[in-house]
Length: 395
Image (cartoon, rainbow, N blue to C red; front, side):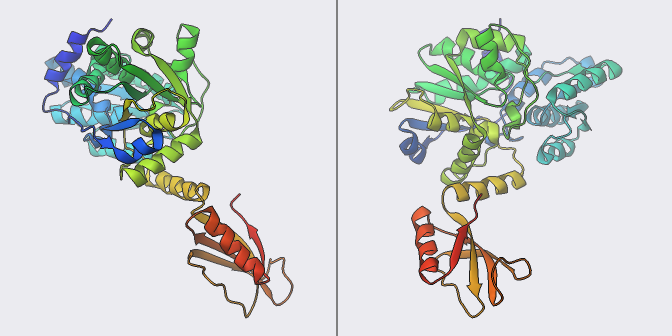
């Protein structure tokens, strides 16, 4: 099994190759959660996630012959970015195989770093199988995204940084996909601070590590969709499961709605863009009874590679849920005017031909920016009092 010494060696090896990301205190998140909350900003890495730690640690240990042949990796995105960037920096040819649904930002970034990108399969497992075929066909070196001691040791350097940056920490919440990050981080932290709780967070749609720990062996889950694509792994690794069984205290899951809300909170409160996987720790802290009230808690924001179109959808849905965006259908008389009641009209859609109103009436759909539920109720009541028929259309 991997030892602390290998993580310490990786830390020395990675000096100057990766960014030692900050871990600041968040006053607002602390007030929301009831814990003293710190955020480890791995979304600030050059490629936007922690994955380059493990990729760089492996690539730096390849001999000249292996570097000349080149490398291949299977990735839902972030691992591929880390391999592509550091392979380019070291002059190593790289091939990245991604599922066909991989986020566009990750595909284009891989190509920008000089990698050959192959889109194959409906999920990570199919991309992984194709990458193994490419490995054999071209005699390339396969860079596993999580189940390789060199990769896990690289990810574990994040744990060493936390021990130095936040010696007061009582718990650390870590996103879990294949288990490379939590395996390395848990080993590093438990070796130096065994009293610190290490809690893994998974998307409820694909809880591969949680199921494996419960079963006592690796299990393969059926395909599922989640906005936390960075941790959308159907089967964890052998090395990572062994490390989790020994060093991880607990694994919990969060829903898609909770992930989306956490992304929006981090954007609004911390002015920090994170992807679904990166938001998982905050989602768990706010929605699961983890017993961390008043404790010093580190949230590992593992990555920030999210498509702007996804962010836009999350923002709009979050505003609706929060009562800050509402859509009202109103039957208006032609000569009537709508008082804004201090709400911002974002969109007006007006329909005569298909209106349910009588001749002389126009059905108008208003999308309004409001300050909350009470404001919506006040606007609705004002319109009703003026004789209008109003129907809220958020569903």
